[in-house]
Length: 425
RNA sequence: GGAUAGGUGGCCGAGUGGUUGAAGGCACCGGUCUCGAAAACCGGCGUACCGGCAACGGUACCGUGAGUUCGAAUCUCACCCUGUCCGCCA
Image: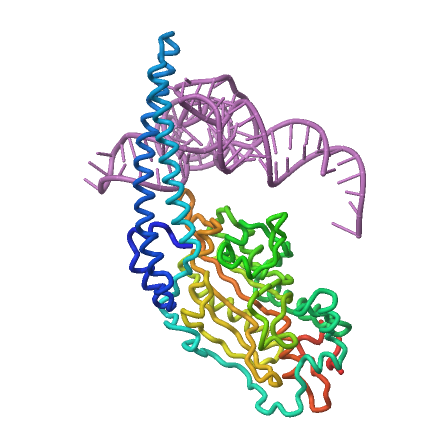
C-alpha cells in the first residue's frame, strides 16, 4: 500500500508508476478520484474536529453549571444539536476515508527505476546457468515417467480430492522429504536463516498485510465460517510474524525460511500447461523471507536470489534468471527476478522461484517497522521474499533433465545424502 | 465446546459518567551532587491525524466495533484475544 500522502504531493509519481506497468488506463481515473476524495476527507476532518472542540468546551460548561447547581438545559439542547452535526460529519469523513483506503488497497506497487517498462514481452534474461538438454528424444514427460516409477499417483489424487491435487508415493514421497531437508539445511546452516514452521491457515489481516487481500480473494481457498484462508505461500504467515511490531536496527537484516504446503485456487487456470506437476492446486515450497532497511533492500534482493539459485545449482538443473518487466511484476513487488528451469520433455522453461523486494509496500499494510536509532521515530522496514524452491516443478524438471538413456533418473550428488540413493529406477 | 477472571501508555499498575492523556512505580533522557559512579533530589518523557512557514493550536486514541448520554477508560451489547478450571481430541 502507498502512503496516503502521495495522493497529495506525488500524484505524478504514482501516475508514472502505473504507466510503467502499462496500467495507466486502468488506474489513472482511480488516481484522480482518490486525490479528490483525499481532499474531501481532510475537509471533513477539519470541520469535524472544530465541532468536537465546540462540544468539548460545552460539556465542560455543563459540568460547571451542574456543580454550581444551576440550570443547564439550554446548553444540553445545544449539545444535542452539535452531537447530530458531529455524527453527520463523522459519516462524511468515514465514507471518504473508506473510499480512499479501498483505492489504495487496489493500487499496485511502483517498480524500481531499473525495472524495464512494459508487459511480459519485455522480461529480460539477466543470467543463465548450465546447459538445457537440446535433444529431448527418448525423454519421457515427467507424468509418464513418474507413473512408471510409481512415485506419482495423479489419478488417486484426483479421486481423493480433485484434479490438481497430487499424491507422491514411495520414493516420490521421500523425494519431497529429501528436497525439503536439503533446502532447509542449506538455508539455516549456510545462508543464515532462522527456520520457522508456520500455520497453513491465516486470518484476513495477514492476507491483507502481504497484499493478497482484498484484491485476490477469488484465487484462494478459504474457510468462510472462520474468516480464515489457506496460504498460497509461506510468505504470508512468515512476513506477518512481525505485523504490528517494531524491530530493532540490530535485528536487520533478518532472514527466515519456512517449508509449507501452498494452496492456489487460481480460478481461471484450467487449460494448457496444466499437465502433470506443472500447475497444481497444492504444492510444497521452501520460502525465504528477509526484512531489511530501505538503504540495503536492493542488495538484499541479490543475496536472496543467489540463495535460491544455489539450490538449483545443487540440483544440477540448468536455469535462467529473468528480470520481470514492470507489467509482469506482481502486485506488491517493486522488482522481481523469476528463476526458471528447463524441462526438456515438456519443452518449456518452468518458473520455480520468484524473488522480490517489496520496498515498504507490505510493511505499510502490515505495519512492520524498525527503529533506526534509540529514541528515533520508527520507519517501515523493507520486506523481501523468494521461493527456494517450489518442489513440484523442480521434481518435474528433475525427472526429465536427469533422465538417463536406460530410463532411470539420476539423483544429483547434493541430494543423495538426503534421498539415500543415487538413482531412481 | 462449557464455566470463570481479565485486556489501561515501553513495562508493571490505579482508576470515580464531567479540566483524565489518564495516579503511582519501573525503565529511559537531561540536570544537581561526586574525582568518577551509585544513591538521593529536581525536571522531562506516548502515538496518530488536521490546520499553520513556524511558534503553536486542535482532534482522536484505555482489546475491536456499535450503542446510551450534553459528556464514556468508566454504563449496555456484540465480537476478538489472554489466563485458569472442566470437557473433547492428535
